Length: 63
Image (cartoon, rainbow, N blue to C red; front, side):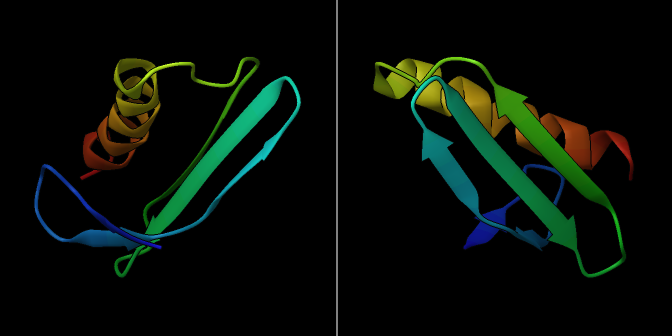
């Protein structure tokens, strides 16, 4: 999936879910990368947005 970053540009990644875990990852064209795993599936749009926001923050912190 293509992920628009708050610091500009995009990352490419994917996510996966299994019972009790959710993962998100991304890599930018300039080689920044991050992987995030949480031990609970989001139960609301707000909690899902926090997972996506954390990945964004991780990638943008490397800029």
